[in-house]
Image (cartoon, rainbow, N blue to C red; front, side, top):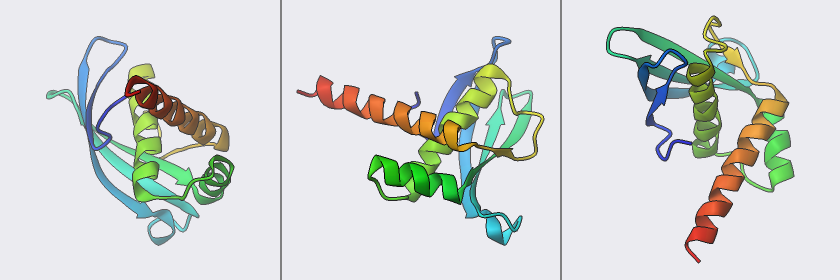
Amino acid sequence: MPDNFRRFTVDDPFGRKWDVEFRWQQNAISIRHADAIDCKYYASTGAEKRELVVSLPHTALLAVAGQAGRELTDAWVIKLAGLHAERMISNWEDLDKAVAVLSADEIYGYNRALEETAAQAAAAHR
């Protein structure tokens, strides 16, 4: 899991390293008339470049935030989307889509991964 969700490196299944950079986060209602939050990433191997857009439906974000007892924040959304961008490259999935829309189950899974990482970091500092 990246330490920095704004700039990180991912290995793809073909042995290439991708530098991934977060570019923007925007309410999709203003650009696609969708009740979602979109996060855009630029990914590059140097020779190849891609734009990745990860869309997180607002209703699913609210459900996960409510279950987790947390606020819906920009930083949290960037982390969730960043985990999917990492998965897209490392598994070479969803790369054919102009916008990868996450399911509620995917958002739950990414949030669980974030919570587990935070718990491990807290335990290491004890």
